[in-house]
Image (cartoon, rainbow, N blue to C red; front, side):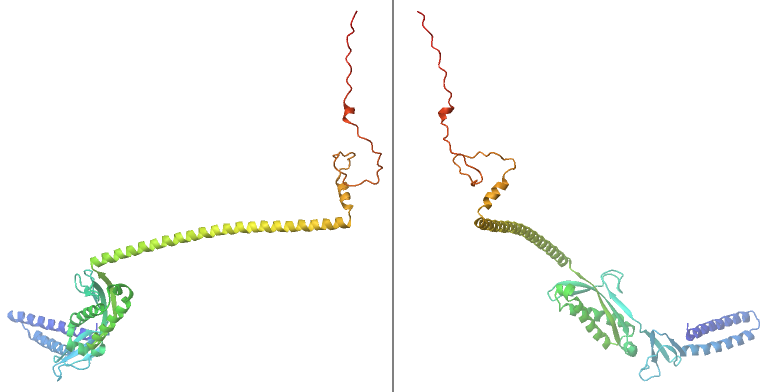
Length: 363
């Protein structure tokens, strides 16, 4: 509460008191009572009320979030060119009055949702894209009156700047901007660029009329039911195609994995076979070298073979039977050789038959 408001309240109370005293004085006068004191009191209160009325009419307090436009009957232009800043000010009573305008930020919302914006019901903006598709746009415009142009706003728009300036300029700027983009650009790739274009155009028009654009919010973009259904079907088709590509890629990976496993097994078989072949070659080379060494040793020491043979015989061997047609493997010079005897004929091994006695004839 400021001093101007207090003075106005006091003035009101005084005038009520004056009116009460006058009524009471009239009643007492009708009854024949003395009313001089009451009349004097009423006159004094009336004088004070008049004085306070003049003071309250001349004092104006401007709030910090406001600016005041002075409408003056004594000014050649009918108004003061300079708006009143926050604080207590004096104006000419009864010849000047003040219109207060807010310079704080204000929001104007246009939405498809009922009771969400300034207009009850569907207040979304219908626009068409460059390819002829219809879209519904929800938006909010955050703006404020330029403190240095409050007088201009009052002269041009008074208190109609919201409905007669902000609303139509915003809707027109949105429609003009959307008409420059295709429907897919509006809701996907160029949405940020679209918002920037609308903000620039709207800011320019509001500035020309004494307002400042604080921010423009592109809240939502709604499509027609037919286009929304086609977009949904397209997204479903794209998802199905993406899933099919994923399955194909998965099958390729599985086939590649199987091929790598088979290649690994084949490489393992080749490596094992090569290892076996290398081992056989090494073994053959070792055997060849061993035979060469044995041959060289035999050439240098012919008796080595006989010695090896003897060492391989069992320690208890006394007699050996060898085939008659096989020569001895080694000579035995230390042993005396008996005189050869003729081999017995087979007939000597056949037993002589015993003669059968003959019966004697009796004369």
